[in-house]
Amino acid sequence: MRDKQPPLELSDKARTQAITSIRRYFDENMDEKIGDLKAALFLDYILAEHGPAIYNQAIADARKFFEERSADLGAVGYHAEFPYWVAAKKAR
Image 1 (cartoon, rainbow, N blue to C red):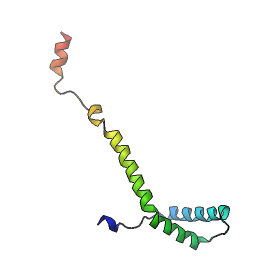
Image 2: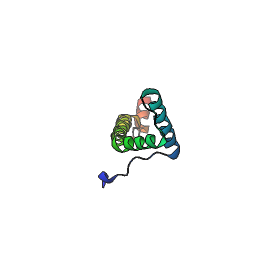
Image 3: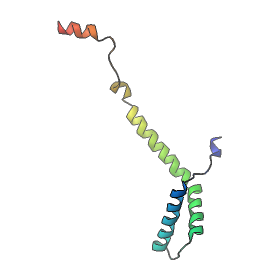
Image 4: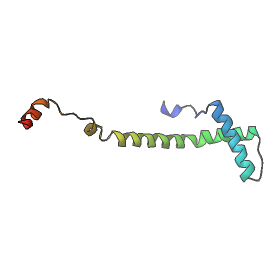
């Protein structure tokens, strides 16, 4: 079931911004200008072909981040149990 994931999708706003960015990139860095249709097709290709690798790396980075932060959770969140008598004995 995991290999049947839907392709990555962008919000309408993000998609519009991505298409505009791709068009600008082609205008400034390539020998040809492209329109919205070609930019949208290029974006679809990038999302389908390269998106999963980027997504998987982002998940791996997030997992590493949370594993590092939760590694000392036991030490940071530990409270000694039944501390009253130990503290009382030290106070005498």
